Image (cartoon, rainbow, N blue to C red; front, top):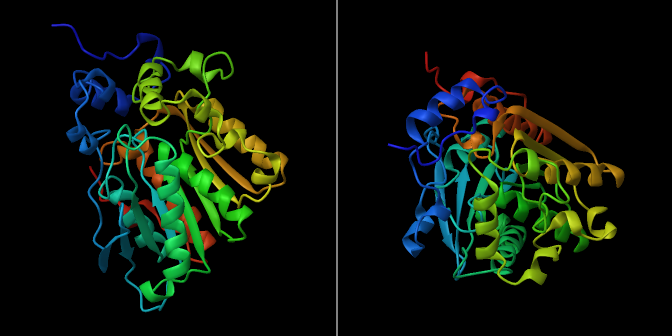
Length: 334
């Protein structure tokens, strides 16, 4: 029987061996979202297998913000009003939930002694642009305005996100700067930065078009769901790379993680270079042997654990905490 989504043989010399083995065993015959007839029940479909379990935290609190929910993960600390990270999950603006990034959110809490707010923003295609961007901003403003009553230090806020969530984090970071809300930092993990991107303007859209996790057909399908109006694709609220200089100039310090075998690699790198040209402090980390979605496979990939450890320690450092080691966040699999 033919394999539904085989790995491109040309990629094998460059692709992480653990990833190859797990993919061939568990993912090669699993249909991707764009290969299925659309049904709203698919919103809760896991975007990738192989994730680690969440870690226990002292408590969580779910809040209804009328049109969407947030979840606050509180740290095990005697310190009142801990700093906070607002985190936006990935999923192409189509998939995901409050549970999507629990594994990383709880590890950030453990490593940095901060609270983490996960945002369950509304999803396309039922809620196209600008709904996701608006919900992301609403969640940020809610924490700024109500942080103290929630037991958080609203004067020390960082934000971050994965893939499409990185897109939301980048746009929120720009708007926060424009509206005078100082951010401690922004973490962008394999972010979507340009929704006009294609093979004509970004090399990775040629070189990595058949890479697993996010090929060009899947990305274009996501784009069609969230941005059915072509003109919206160049709006800075959907394409932060295309924002005016004055928007980029007020962005905070950034930690950007890229995958060398990702369709989005070139646009993520371009965004980091744009920030640097505006004089911003930018840390860029590249995992050359990994594709998109690999960071979420931290239950099976050593390199994914390293990826998430880097994010956690960057946040810990920004909040004045000492670094942690891998064994603080993950059990040994040997």
